[in-house]
Image 1 (cartoon, rainbow, N blue to C red):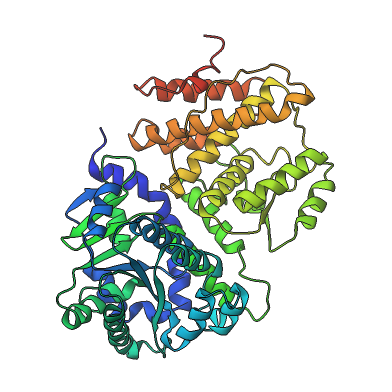
Image 2 (cartoon, one colour):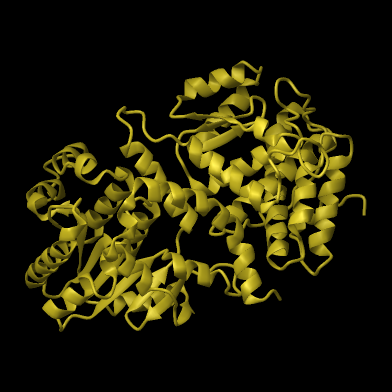
Length: 522
């Protein structure tokens, strides 16, 4: 078994490469990170007592009279976790639940109450509380939390006050929030109060300290989310995924995202706030950063002038990135390269579900919405094509229905899945969905089935490959060589597939039946 230090390194290395560039840009555009108030939070939580599971987390939450939930405002997963926690805590016959929010000023409580009574709709609520002007983060996950609270809680309260921009007054905002919580306790003496507040407010000497002084009889439980230092330390645990850790007797931390996803989302918000138009953030730097991180992870020199162990001048093969473009633009891109109607519609659906897609025919990224897990997979797919010289660009041959095509697509899915796990270890493991038969010649009516089969098999192989990498059985040198192999050559894709399958199986890794089926010649 790999040591704790080697596990931590293998799970974290690619992300740390990617984070370096993101953090540099954030420091340039947001100097507040050096403020003492924010540093107090980052220094407070450096280690934990033990790993806990979801059941233990729920038990801790149930012990609290007031549950403080740390919010990383730019990360939708943070607000969605709060909604899930609220729904789980609000059980029939148990204590009532109320929700307190930093997002809404206390002065706007009457507007929130009108929405609660269904006297105004979501759009009027958004405008009147000046959500986009005074808050500026994503509306959709926050509104999902509001709807969940209206369905399951007894009330929602705004807790914040001005000024938000002046960090010299942030302590006064803590005291104001605690005063409002004391009023809510008088109004709801038996309720559990769930309070979603920015994570920096939850350092022990900040809001929790003021709250305990004001309401000493209340049991306060703090639920942090995705704290960097705790995340990197948990990356060394033997289990594949750590759901949560106990930091102290009254503090836990859950992991529903990664540091890279957090800071990429924040960078996108900084980009959007810095623009004077209405087009939204520029996603190109985010995509290029993911690609660059994979290059550093695989020790690939983007400036190499020769083919062989390095692709020739990969820097000249970087993809064009289309942001904020319409479905019509995507259809036009594909039609210019004679894509079949069913292929085009499949790509449109792909973008709707995953937010982005890499198009090897035109060497372009089409990004509608940044979703870290899928963007990482598409970035890896680009690198896989670029390492082979972009064989499909500008009319390159692709013989659909052949055995070579099937294995090539399977390898593309496998390496794409592997890359997404390297950059986003929180991605759930691929599950074996049963056996799939390989057909030497797939007729037109079965193309969709064959494509689904190659995706399933590729994901399962990519999952096994990631596991072997974590255990040190697969090196980055091996991975680099597999990325560089020209799979379009006759028989090469099948050869590489079988080599990888044998590599992970040869070290005691039991592959799912669906993957083992492809070794037809054994």
